[in-house]
Length: 424
Image 1 (spheres, rainbow, N blue to C red):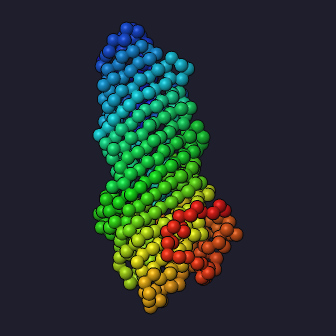
Image 2: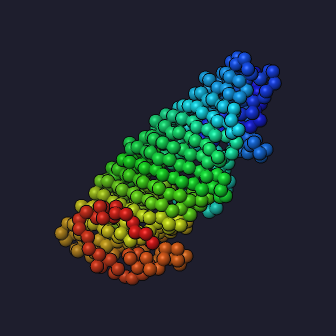
Image 3: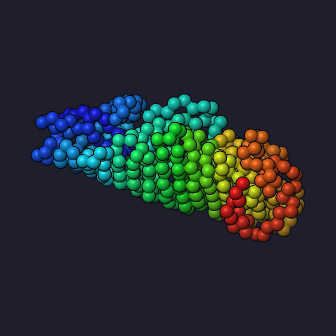
């Protein structure tokens, strides 16, 4: 039997059905006789009558049991955009707002395959690290839903997650991905994401913690062979507005903390990933980079408070090697992706820095995608206004030369940099 629903809700590989016909031939009749059926659709019509195009074809097979107000899709086999899902879903429409619950599993989910085709980006991929392509965030208001999801593989470009578990909740037009847990590159990831779709543009909250990630096990880093060891922890707690990653980050508030453990790395790869940007910045902060092709790292920290899209901290940057320590700070404008970081080196091995004459302050400007050693200010006047001139005198590169000359610190610079960033 082939049936047409009035609408189909599809998001992140989860599809729920509603509005089944109520005629005598309907699978969902009072007798509750199970019937297998298939549904295919290339577009989606919302309860408001608006058609969403660009979604991949959808095919559903299941055994339906129940009545026209409460039914269950058992032995569910769903395919959308090459993604296969299996499990069970129950739809209860006895209340004013239908409620959907269930559990789905998949061998592999590629998030990019489930979303509508991307519009053209502003700029080119070589200009920016964060995508400016808008993502359609249509969250129907006519349903409440709670779905448990398990995927053996989950591709969230550029990350490949494994053994992923999450709870997807839809209520009053707000979509939440809760209790997300998984494995990535030898480490773990956990977090949540909430999309408040009724606002225009949508508000997005992101909380994520990656622990013990091995960069050399990530495909884009492994291909370059520039990083060995350097286990990395990343903590994000951000809230912003927009329909693209760039817009959300460029308007966000919250905190970012990156901690890197012992390892070594050479010149950053050209894969335009977060890790390329991270090791590119750390390499440029190395005062011996002209003499050393490889930086042997003991630890590094980037710790920022984010306000209105500007990440800043006067003492939130630390690098420690067997030869030297660096403690400093600066700002990263997440909207323009321009950076202005500076630090004061202090030698650990007697004679190393002094003999080379590199005990002067180091500074890094440019952009996240193309960091570069600088000798002056690199952040525009617009960013200065957003950060606040008074706060910037606390240790940023835009003001005076030699501003770190009076900075006193011991050997454990990474602990110093991890301290909470001051408010502006």
